[in-house]
Amino acid sequence: MTPDATWLTRQSTSAFARRRWAGYLALVIVDCAVYEAGSRRAGELPLSAASEACRRDGAFVWLGMVEPSEEEFDAVQREFELHELAVEDAVVAHQRPKLEVYGDTLFMVLKTLRFDREAHETDVETGEIMVFVNEAFVITVRHGQASGLHDVRLRLEKRPDLLRHGTGAVLHAIIDQVVDDYEDVVARVGHDIADVEEEVFSPEEGNPAERIYMLEREVLQFHRAVAPLVMPVERLTKGGYDLVTEELRNYFRDVHDHLLRVQQEIAGYRDLLSSVLQANLAQLSVRQNVQTRKISAWVAILAVPTLVAGLYGMNFRYVPGASWHYGYFIVNIVVLGVCTTLYWRFRRSGWL
Image (cartoon, rainbow, N blue to C red; front, top):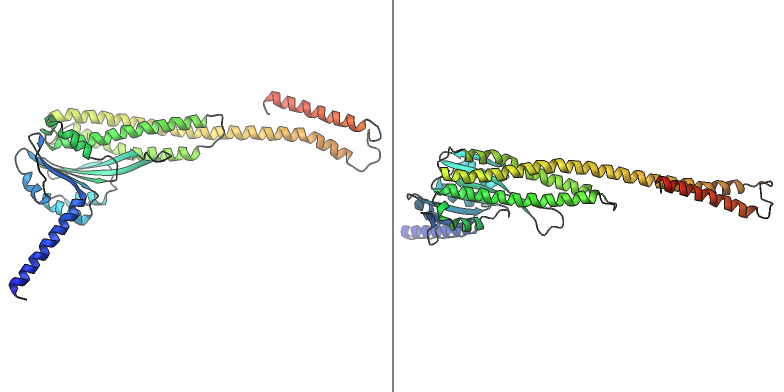
């Protein structure tokens, strides 16, 4: 093969590899767009042109990805010069909510929650959203099905007054969506706890201890998602970041207030579930005592005929009333009278 033919073959192979890799990226990149002067620029934006597009004054790129692998995210990392530690957190996931600064780029981790509507029992589905943001771009990496960002993008595109504030408005919209989903989940958890309370104090016998335990696990999972996020959002409300303008700080304060309210409700639910569990144990103890008293009362009643039958069943010739014509009837009447009296006394005392 001639040198020219070898060079052409290598170029063709390289071009094929680039096209195939672009196809892989298209599966994980859900949207990539340029925003300028409060509106979205028309047309599709390939990843190769995203870095150049966001260098213009007043323009920024919003790139959304879903569960990329390390190899798939490598092109994005090189294109936007992202820090390797933040990239590792974004790809691996399973991080706690946090806000970190790498140079001029903020890296924020958000835990997402939603109810599985098809489940028969309460079932909270978790996920994560990692956000890389500076004045030139916003890159979101989503893991799990909770808190989809497509509707967030559509709502924000209808608010050019907010988009003119740049990437800080996008960061606020994402956090606001996550916190709104928290409020929906916390309301559903509250309804389920109320149902469990009714079941615990219901006159019908049952033991909802397993359901209470599952609710406690979900509330604990909820707490792990919300509590660590309070401090990062509070830092954004206090300023100190160029992308959070003075006008946006008011919006961040509103999100922070909602987040604090959710945190307080979760703390109340944890205490309430502990009290419900103790009440359920007390109810079980009371029901066991009631059953024990009923059994004891019936044993006492049945002991009378058993005792009489045992005495008259002994093989003796001279048993009182054995030779009397009405002895059998008199003994049975006495036994029935004693049993009836015992039943009436136990019934009056609440044992039966």
